[in-house]
Length: 330
Ligand SMILES: [Zn+2]
Image 1 (cartoon, rainbow, N blue to C red):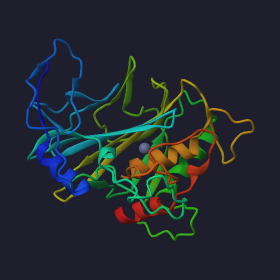
Image 2: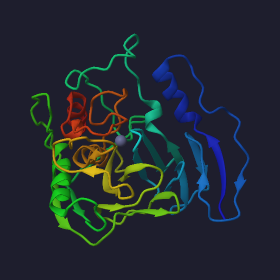
Image 3: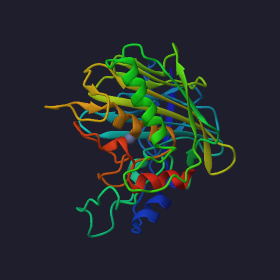
C-alpha cells in the first residue's frame, strides 16, 4: 500500500510562469488535495508540478498515462520520453531533490513558443535556432560528464542486424559529432562509444499496456520490444546531482517498438512509403534525449522537434537549433 499526499509545486511553478509569461499566471493553486490511498500496488498518480509527499526510492509513480518511473534516490532524477506513431511525443521528469523532496515536471509545458506574431511561421531547419534541454527547469539541466558507452540487444528486431546496428551507430554519433545540414562545424566535446552486442535488456519494461522506466542498472542499452499504445520508442535517462545545476547523466536506455514492424533502415525513404519510420531518424532524436537535449519549442524542423512524421528521413541530420543545443551543453 502506498499513501501519497500531493501538494502544489507553487515554489517552482509560480516563478517559472512569471518568467515565461510575465502575467503572473498562477501555479496549481494553494489548495492541496487530501491524502490518497490505494489498496493495491497501482502506481501513485500525480499531477504535473506536484510534490509526492512520502515517496520513497523505488516507489512506482505514473508520470504520464501508461508510463511509470521509479522514484530515484535523493539527489537523482529520471526523465522519460515517448515518441508515438501519430507523431506526438511526451516528456516527464521525476526529481528527488535532496532539499525539496520528490516532484514531477513536464518540461514541454514550460517551453517558450515562437516570438509574438510568428506563431504560425516555421523557420527552415538552418534558420530555426531554438533548442531546449531535457531538465531545463529552474536552471537545472543534465549532461554526460564522461563518455556515453552503449550496447545493443538485437533480440526481436524487425530489422536485419547489420542494418539496425548501422542505424543506431549513425544516430549515436550524429549528436556528439554534430552531423548537420547547415555547414556548421563540430564544436562539441561530447563523446560516445559502441560497446557491441549484449544479452542484457534495456531496463524499460512493459506490463500490460504500461511502460516502465525501471531502476538504473549502470548499462546503457538499446533494444527492441513491444510497446503499447501506438508508440515508436521510449528513452529513459537517469541523472545524478553533483552539487551543480548541471546534473550528471549516469545512464540512458532506449526501447524500440516491435509491434508494428514499420521501420525502415538506411537513408532513403522506401518507394510507396506509407506509415513507415526511419530508424536512423527516430534513433537520432532518442539519442538527443540520451545526451540531455529536450524538445524545441515549436513543431518545426529540428531533430528535437516535439513531433515527427512517417516517411521522412529528415531527422538523420541536425538543424541549427539542434547544433546550438549540443554546443550549449558540451
Ligand atoms: Zn523527444
